[in-house]
Amino acid sequence: MSQPRIFSGIQPSGIPTLGNYLGAIRNWVTLQDSHECIWCVVDLHAITVWQEPAALARQTREMAAVLLACGLDPVKHVLFAQSHVRAHAQLAWIFNCVARLGWLNRMTQFKDKAGKDREAASAGLYVYPNLMAADILAYHATRVPVGDDQRQHLELANDIAQKFNHDYGVAFFPPIEPLILGPAARVMSLRDGTRKMSKSDPSDQSRINLNDDADTIALKIRRAKTDPEPLPGSEAGLANRPEARNLVGIYAALAGVAPGAVLAEHEGMGFGAFKPKLAEVLVSVLGPIARETERLLADPGQIDAALRTGAGRAAAIADPIVAEAERLVGFLPAG
Ligand code: TYM
Image 1: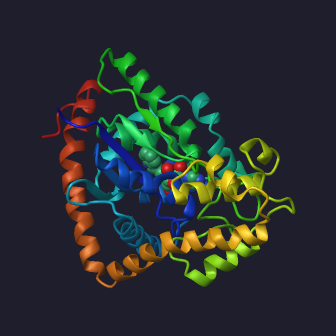
Image 2: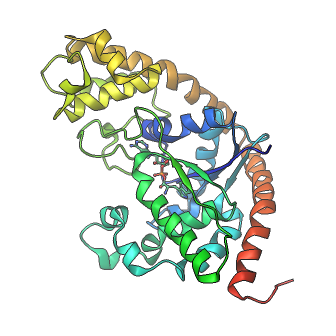
């Protein structure tokens, strides 16, 4: 029997963070054993907010290098850049005509990213979730591993799939199942435990980047906001302590145990003692990834070649599916 197909994506809008790693990438690596996987560096999504052209190109290549260094397998699975496969933009246009304005108006990420001056946001940022739906459905992927912040976008993708099927009287697009896994599905900022850790946060102290060296990691963790209370013995004791909860969640995810087990082991310990332990685990996990990323980036031509090969294989899957969607809509065959 064939394995279920997975699609997921990451924006090349900066160096990936610990949040990207624990909320998504690390799960992607594990899922490769049991799924057919399609991994995408989503540069079309990145330009929904301004990107310096030279930086975008560099970051797209760096993102591919990090994903390879983390253990994504570009031979057994597919890794590519979104702009290399035209099917994404083609299907997104159809979905722009399926999705309703009322649905898009409910998207909390648009509200967060557009900020106070909504009139100045790009039209692309507004229809961002339609492109996401196209990414997934162009492959008839049924499982999508993401961090918790993408939940609402995946609900919208399911609404789009259902409306398309309903309007055209078909059962063409399958339902999508979000895979939101582990104790770090929502890693928070090191400066504010109520905000998500993000590669686009203006403060570098708010996040761990996957290329931070050991000293930087230790310093950022030492400076991370906490409270003066010692660690409680169980998760109930973390209520109303978002920063403490975040650091415990990160430790648990890295150690591969439940937060309750971390607390049982460290009950009564203050953050002065817990933070160096956390930094040590972080360095042991992230150090090898940073070194491998650097090694890969020494040969950019090879990364570009891997992405081009991936794009060819991705297009071979997506093109016939999108051609069929176009036929269902009533477009005359192009070729
Ligand atoms: P992006 O680039 O913001 O993030 C990539 C992945 O990392 C997860 N993530 C986090 N998880 C836990 N804690 C955090 N602080 C954290 N920050 C980010 C995200 O949930 C995501 O899984 N819209 C997507 C990219 C995308 C996509 C898709 C995803 C485009 N098309 C199709 C799935 C399917 C995004 O901006 O991810």
